[in-house]
Structures are given as C-alpha cells and as structure tokens.
Amino acid sequence: MKLDLRFVNVPLEELWCEVVAALVFEEPFESQGPIYALDTKTGGYLSFLSEGGFWMGSEGSTLLLASEKKIRSDKIVLRGLGPRADCSPESFVGHVAELGNALALLKCHDLGVWIPCPGESGKKLDVLFRGACETLLNAYLEKEGDNAQDSFLKVVFSMPHGSPIDLEKTAAFLRKKFSSRYNCSVVVMGEEHERVSDTRRSKLG
Image (cartoon, rainbow, N blue to C red; front, side, top):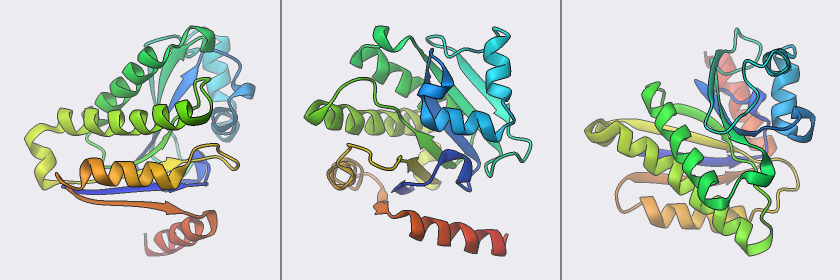
C-alpha cells in the first residue's frame, strides 16, 4: 500500500476528499470550532439533528451523511464521544479505532480527518494525539486486511491555527511506525500549499 499522510491547517469543509470524518463531544457545537464550521456550511443541519434528538454526539453513536455538495467532500462521518468530562484517554482512543473501522467499511481511500483535544495538555496531549493517529490508521488497515497491500490511502489531518500539537514530531513518529510496512509519506503542509493543491485539483477535475 501507498500511505499518504498530511497535516494541514485547512478546515474540514474546505478539503477535497471522498469523506471528511471527525470525533464529536456531546456538547454545543459552538464550543467545537471545526464542527461548528461544518454545521454552518451544511446550513445548520447538524444542529437540526441535535435539537431533534436524532444525533447529539452521544458516546458510541456514528452519523453518516451525504454532503449534497455543501462542502467539498462527498460524505461526512461523525463519531460521538459523549460528554467531554466523561471521556477518558482509553475511551477516546477506542472511539478513534471505531472511526477507523467505519471509514474502512465505506471503501473510501481519500479521507479528511479532525481529531479534537480531549482535555490533556503538554506532553500528554502530544502522546495522546500521536497514539490516536496511529490507532485510526491501524484500525483502517486491519479492517482492509489483505486488500491493504494493493491499495492507496490518503489521510489529510485538519489542524486548526494555533494547535498545541508538535506536528513535526507527530510526523516523525508516524513515519517510523508505518514506513517499515508500507510505502509511506508523511508531510506537514502549510495552508497556502494545500490551497494551491486544491485549486489545481479543481481545475483538473
């Protein structure tokens, strides 16, 4: 498999990909910046579902939506984490794995992902985030099974401005973890670079 991993400071709703996916706490979307932006771009549809009690981000719940061209990706997948105060590092990583499984079942190989900060800080946050990225990828690849050896997977991790994560160390960590098994590229990209790439892709497509 060719594994193409990128970290960019481009919002989920502006990524060109098959699916955008995110982990969502059971709390107002306004307090979860990228989710609030996604809700706004979809005309408040996520808020509509939440207010109607259909999907609120409760622990273990998964939501799959067609984007209906309101954002650049074709589909939206959200995994509920439940209340932030009740989300332990162990349960957080477990939900990351379930999100990876769900994405593999969709048979999509061009993904945009947002992983929130579950309340940790400093070195603990860096370690948890790296572990979450590794867990997501391992869950996806294990679900793919033998098919993973002959396919291509691109994952773009959307990172907000001012993120406390040390992305260069995260990239080095993932490169070390996956390069022995796959043809693996891990890149930290600036916003301008990624937007230029998106513009070129739009013109070509």
